[in-house]
Image (cartoon, rainbow, N blue to C red; front, side, top):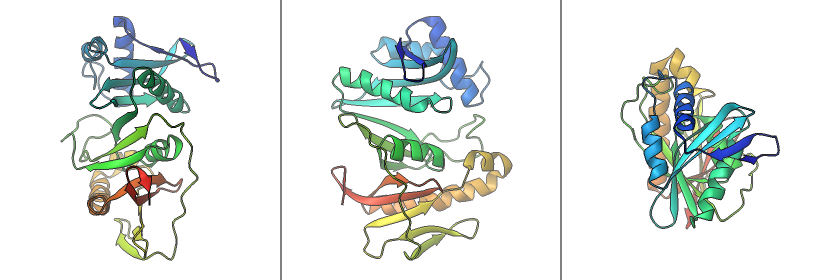
Length: 259
């Protein structure tokens, strides 16, 4: 087991009991009955047996985070799922990165809900990954306690494992950039750079809470953000930043470099 600077231990999990605990942890995070987990223990066991990895973070003896990764083509790894208690996500992703690099991987991909601003900040600003693909209703209907009642759009992010993560500053959204869309709340949803080099798009403050309180309004946000993203991605824009107040920066990129 590897200890982080904060004293949290991280290790790869192979044993039946450890994998069962990870399965229960994921059930708690996604608010499903433990009898119907999003990732059953036998599935995790099979992925490990096939050469993948389950990393788990322990605060003392308490399981406080976990992540699952498998290999893809062309020195690529795919992170199937990751969740961690507050403040531990970075350590878990760093452990996945080290594991993948040791096996010759150069990039890692995963998906997340683009309406969840805090996850966008972590992936784009903290890790320095890039949103490279917008997927409409990727999983179809989902019945867990977090996603139920919504459509499962996802943003694929690609993380360059060969470069040390460099946290980016909060991107500035020019207040004088022309407005292209208004949101379900009547406020500005998206702006576009007059020089056609950037698009900025806002997401709700807490879509998980909104989804629970007003599913219809949350779904209108889904459609509104989808419209902005699909149009921008079709033009070659990619997601490169997220501000603390919920604004994405989409920029044109060439071979992973912002132009």
